[in-house]
Picture 1 (cartoon, rainbow, N blue to C red):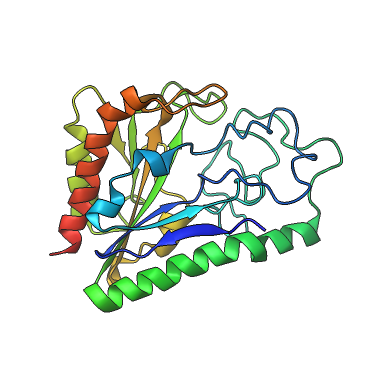
Picture 2: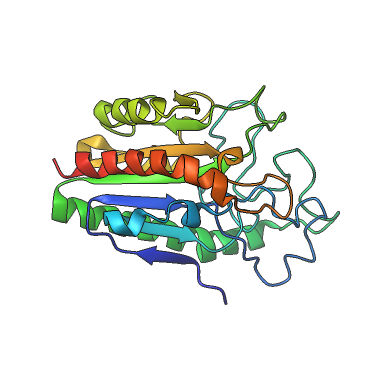
Length: 263
């Protein structure tokens, strides 16, 4: 069985979660997915490679191994919608574009969904909880960066093109205000790129659930537009030339989180 996640413990009070980078499928699932879903186009492609500086900064990392079509790790276990309007759920049955994700009659039943929740969703969240607890005990605080990426234009989900950097702090509830303000300042100074704080993406379940400043836990999400570092059509290739432009700004952003965590 493919491992559930890859985890590296950090030396600083920053954990970077990447819940949507996985591409592994549970046994038999590939045969049940539709042709539209099989390229796994809704994956947050190449983020570990893009954020290749995290180890040098001492940040912990947690990256999912399985596709969001197995279970969406950034949705609550009760599958309560996080946003008004079009979205995808805990067990996505449609793609971002609204195309059915399963062949007719091949959708998971209630028992399978419950098994996926316990087998794939629960361990990832148990690891986040354990690592945040460890960091608060050691450093007095913990900062969780939930790292995501998405195509800049997805008409079913939002109008027009997204800003390049989409920061979310649950409207200021998931972290100290200084973290959101400083992060927006750093990314807002990136020449040639655009950014927004608490725009379309305010943070998913991970940001909202684990961000608890009163307990020393601070969470922030970054949804990065994929056109800044990759090709957004199959085979979804990584673009080192584009990544070289955006990576320094991402590093400055994470360095800001590390600096705040060391205060």
